[in-house]
Image 1 (spheres, rainbow, N blue to C red):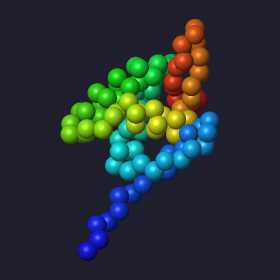
Image 2 (cartoon, rainbow, N blue to C red):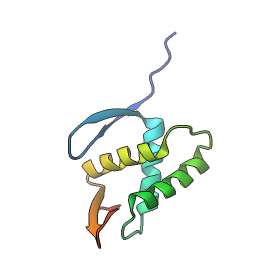
Image 3 (cartoon, rainbow, N blue to C red):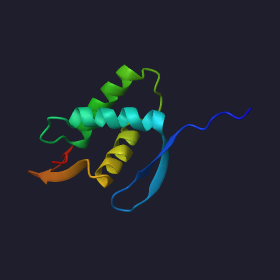
Image 4 (spheres, one colour):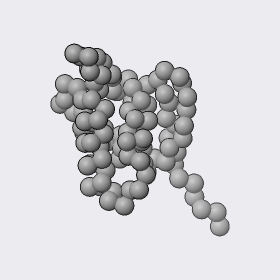
Length: 100
């Protein structure tokens, strides 16, 4: 009997429109970690955001072996495409925050 296919989510890059398919089992926890990290924040650099997401994901999924920073940037860009997160520049720093 065929194994059931994992649910996929299409992730889109805001500038290029490039699409990738991610397993929902990875997309959802990383998305939740990004939103948790940015909630109440006036803006975080990518490094600050990634550090937070790594801590959150490794607490939830200690056996996660893939590149959390790579998934963080890909999913953050998708959230920007969906109008949930925005990138802005303040004092020469590129920051991320939840869209108001």
